[in-house]
Image 1 (cartoon, rainbow, N blue to C red):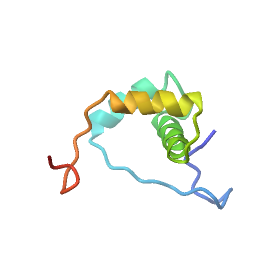
Image 2: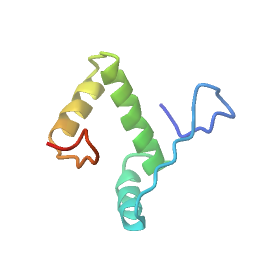
Image 3: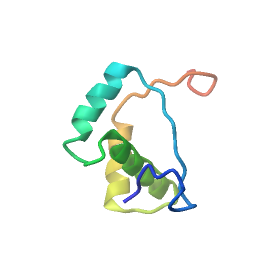
Image 4: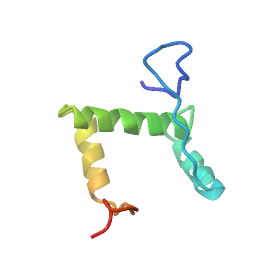
Length: 84
């Protein structure tokens, strides 16, 4: 299972810092605790792992479910790429 390891134990991992508003973090942490002992960090690491599998062409069930979930939600984008 991917973790938020800072690379001290395994050189193939990095720490990813993400800035979110406090209320969003609190809500995400409450929800994530139902799925993972380490909370939101462990859930986010699993999501990133699934995205990487999907990008690599892996047709695992997890990658397909994650892709379907992401496709069903409108994600706001900023900048030239997100403008329609």
